[in-house]
Length: 315
Ligand code: R5P
Image 1 (cartoon, rainbow, N blue to C red):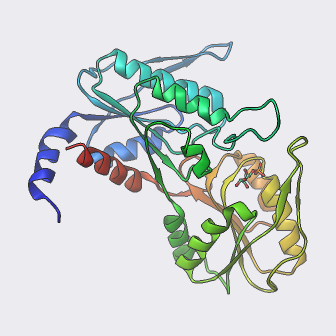
Image 2 (cartoon, rainbow, N blue to C red; image 1 turned 30 degrees about the horizontal axis):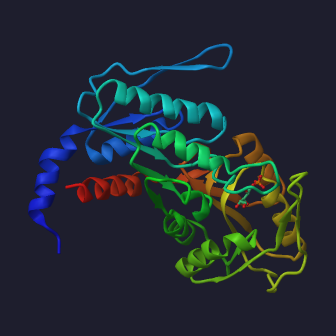
C-alpha cells in the first residue's frame, strides 16, 4: 500500500537537497532529469588540455547535497569515465552527503570476463574505482551483461529501455509483418521481450566473433522465411557497426522488406550511421544514452523514476 506520509516526508525533506550535475557527456539528458526532479542543474566547467587531460570545476555550494552525476561513458570512453570519477570525487570533496552516478551507457561492460589467458575482466576495475569513491547506488541502462553487474559491490539499478524502444517501433514505424531478430544468441531474451511488445515473431542469428582478430561471421541459415517481412534487428549497442553490416547483408539476400536497427546505445558516430544507412538499413533508432542523430527514445523519465525509488527506499 502507498504510504502517503512517507511520500510527503520525502517531498519535504529529500528532494529539496537533491541537485543534478550533468557531465560533459550527458548535458541534455542531465538537464531533462533535473527538470523531472524539479531540482537545480549545476553546470560543470570542463577544460581539456592539449595533452588530453581533463580538468573540472564546480562553482556551487554542494554542502549536504545529494548529488546526481549524469555522465554516460561512450567514446572517448576513458576520458568520459575519468571525468565521471573527477566529478564524483569533487562532489564529496565539497561536502556532498551522497553521490549517485547515472551512467546510462556503462563502458567496459563488454569486458566482463577473461576471454583469453593473460586478460582480466576490466569491468571489475571500474566497479572498484566507483566503490572506493564512496558510491553505494548507481543507475545504468541495459548494461551489456548480468555478469558485468556481478562485479559491483553496490546497489545497481539497471533500467531496461526495451519496452520504450518497442513502443517507439509500434507507434512510429509503419511495420509490415515484422520479425524481430537478435544478431547473436546472447541477445535472444531481449528480442523475445521486444517481439512480445510489438506482437511479432522473433529469432536469433548465430554470430561468432574471433577473439584474436575481432572478425565476425554469421551463419547463413535462417530458422524462418523472412521474404517480404519488415525486420527489426535489436541489439544492446552499435559500436563499429560490423555486426549490423553483416546481419543486413544476410537479411537483404533473403529478400526481406525494410530493415531497422534498434539499439539501446549507438556508440558509432553520425558519419558511421550514414554509412550504415547507405548499406541497406532503412533507419537506426536508439535511446539518448548517447547523443546521436538517431537517439530518439528519451530515458529521462525512467531515470527520474529510478532515482525516486532509490530516495524513497532510504526513507
Ligand atoms: C555483442 O555482444 C553486442 O551485443 C553487440 O552486438 C556488439 O558489441 C556490437 O558491436 P559492433 O557494432 O562493433 O559489431
